[in-house]
Length: 316
View (tube, one colour):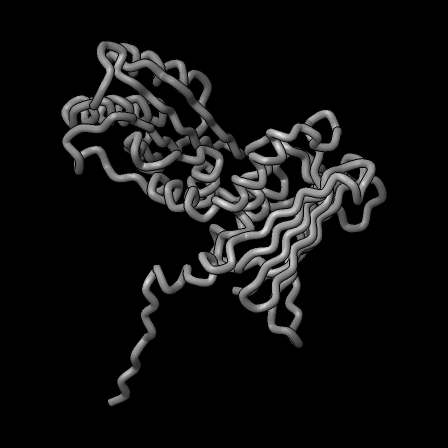
């Protein structure tokens, strides 16, 4: 009988290198006339590239070029960024905030991850803040009916974000008790869940077998929930994938073209993405690869006019 012992590394030991050598951030406004160059040198680990891209996109910064490379346990990120008006980042307060946010991305990520996979409404007796996650068939008038149900149950919608793809929709709705501040008891939460399930089933006409109504809970002390990050996960879990229309070398084509190849000599994969350029494109691409448990170790991103090219190398 063969006995195999798998290594176990304590979390404090695993993060030792990061604590000894924290990320070094350099924000350079002298190297380029057109943009600000953000350079980050840090210990490498799964998900760190996503964290860096998330910090920049959350500030509505435009990433025109990016170069990422890693060597073993170290990672170097270079981002060419501007504001929404195409200007360099000259505000001292903003520059300081970016430096601080990038250096503290690991601790903030712990808070975000605790909110990403939230518990069901039956586990804790009371919650302070309620978020409803819904993935279902996209149909006209559904949000109007959901809003009417929530209003009738005495809840105010504080914020709501929805993504649609083909005939599917994923949304996150944050609520608060309209009658009083403070925790919401489990009985009311169960009532909300039952009412929303009835709405979805009634509109679906198929007993709602393919639809999902999810209640997710969050406390004020548990960090913050990154809505777009969570929506990526919900759409990926829904599994509604669309075939991309390849350009096939057509001149002037602005469709999305994705190709994946394997570099056998080095043993890694390379994905090439050419698509229409838009805000948060790089963040979305890294989100998809991270959710698929791929480790991006080098990348080159550039934009030319209305089109963007991304080349990312990753390990499975």
